Image (cartoon, rainbow, N blue to C red; front, side, top):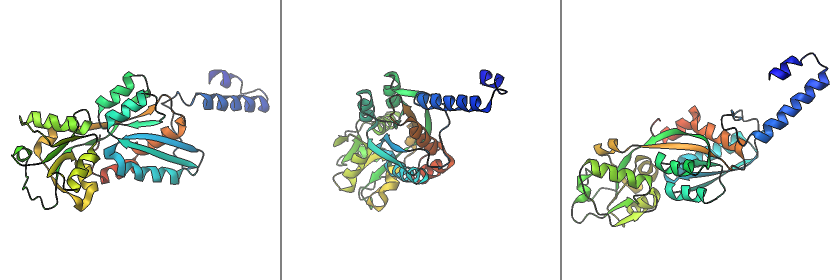
Length: 270
């Protein structure tokens, strides 16, 4: 910038050439500058596909934000891969092509950052807390976390390596309760499905998933959930093939509009 400033009295065509050179340099370096402000004007300058790996609990809210992003930036397409955060992190470190990673816990994000696969520092964009999902009508009359330990209750948990499973175990440990589930599931949606299909009496999932399920399940809040609230970090990935559009999607997630969508799904402010 200093060199350019000293040359402002040179002919106009030279200044124009320098500006063009700077623009070209900026375009070449965009994939590595995670601090650059993305285009959020909706002017249509962004294009191409953005691949987002996101925790299963983000499915409804991120799908809505993806549609909003495509509408604001004609010519773009947001493709999602939802699943357990640990599995997604393993896929990323294993070389799976992706532009953005949104995890349900700092621990699973750390797998990616420790491998050097994130660009810049991940940012926490929401938080989430647990709730018990029961069969509609709550026939087992479950009103507390302790009720899940009663004989005859068929309870499903997320796998302990998955953020929702780790959080559930943390809540159980804080309450000094021991629970043997009928199954451990690979992500929160799979755990919830067991209850929706009445293959289980209850599952410990996120409050957002209970809300998304509507009348397919009934939610039961429990105070121990305050001991196991999960932070959700999001990051641009180092090998992003569409870094500028990826930055713009992250900006939308963290914007007031994005936060409004996430709050509507039941997520907590970061």
